[in-house]
Image (tube, rainbow, N blue to C red):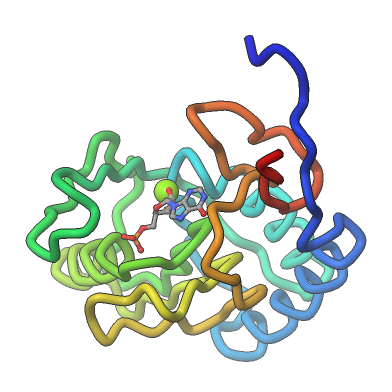
Length: 179
Ligand code: IMP
Ligand code: MG
């Protein structure tokens, strides 16, 4: 257990996130249509994905949902770090319009790997939706199709994002203020 909740500066309040999710869902519906396969990348995107699929419902989309866990090995500062699948999807992606959902885009390695992998398996299209985008941290030219918010270069927590496996339950996104 963490001894006490630290002081957290809120960057994105839950009402702002909820509003943005509805906007994202409208964009996604307009682009992909009603018949899509959502693949949520675990663990970080599960809260965002759970809210986004309900926003997608409001936007007239009837998604099927699957999950994939990905892990990045090696030193994060070294560009040769490789991504591996630690839990694969159950559904087939062949011929499907896939919406890949993740929490935060940083180096771009995770999304670049997953997108290529799903296209290799025969997905018709793979579009990516990221809750947050740390643009300054990219090591490749990967760009997300849909982004919730641009994120400052801070270690953020909450709304699914963890620090040492804690704080995923926070209903907002923020950062720990060091005293
Ligand atoms: P990348 O784009 O391959 O570097 O992957 C980014 C991954 O690193 C995300 O899916 C998160 O799991 C993790 N991550 C990056 N920045 C943060 C942060 O600020 N807070 C929590 N997790 C982060
Ligand atoms: Mg992650």
